[in-house]
Image 1 (cartoon, helix red, strand yellow):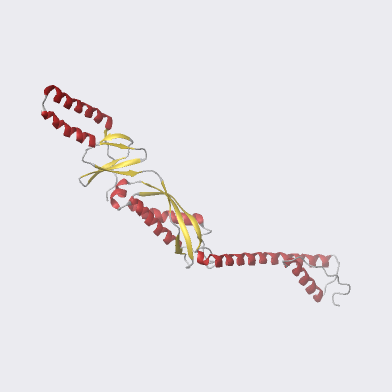
Image 2 (image 1 turned 30 degrees about the horizontal axis):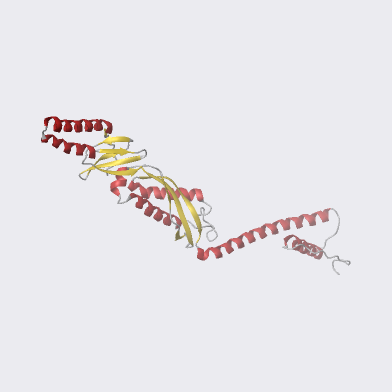
Amino acid sequence: MKKETEFKATNGYIMLFILVVTITGMMTGLIIFDNPLFLLLGLLIILIIKGFFIVNPNSSKVLVLFGAYKGTVRDNGFFWANPFFSRQKISLRARNFDSERVKVNDKIGNPIMINVILVWQVSDTYKSAFDVDNYEEFVKVQTDAAVRKLAGSYPYDNFDDEQAEFTLRSGMDEVNEALENEITERLAIAGIKVMEARIGYLAYAPEIASSMLKRQQAVAIVAARKKIVEGAVGMVEDALHKLSTDDIIDFDDDKKASMVSNLMVVLCGDKEAVPVVNTGTLNS
């Protein structure tokens, strides 16, 4: 497989000087010698003019002669080369690509919306020019394919797959690294260097977003309630132990059950407790 080769073009200012000399010679010959043969220098002048080209910073020119690749000019400046060369401009600048948000299924089948932000640049002009039809379109299509494959490799979260070590939502560093490796492998054929690839947008698809939000809220409520109950049990245990060790009150099983019930209601309830004054015994 061919790769990029560097082409050293002739300094354009030298050829510009030769062009001026040629034009001067032709005009002098026509005027002084009145010889129409000097008009033939006009063909040479046209060929010299066609050979001039400019390469801007972070740009390049791919040179082809009658279907044969001759090299790439990466140096910046004013140059001259064989006028029969065809010259294709390829930018070497770093470029951003913010893909469209696409709907895909995650590992467990949930529809999600996802897009990727990609920073890339051309590293091999030969591959970009000749190994793919349109390297810019190639970047877009292959990036979209890589995103779809990535989304199908991980669950969105671990609600339905508690054994998942990484998810799209929580394992961003690992997921972005996997995404970058996947895109790098796909774009290597086009001579594209991936500088950065990361997920730019991630959410459930609209048709299930409301249901998933309710599920997340339910999970959060259950987790909060569990924490509250764990704390309340500890507080009740401490209160009973303190009352018992300080000989404030003796508890039989019924009194302990009543005390525990009241404390748990007070500590775990959503509303403020309403005090009730008991003027009799606990058993009355």
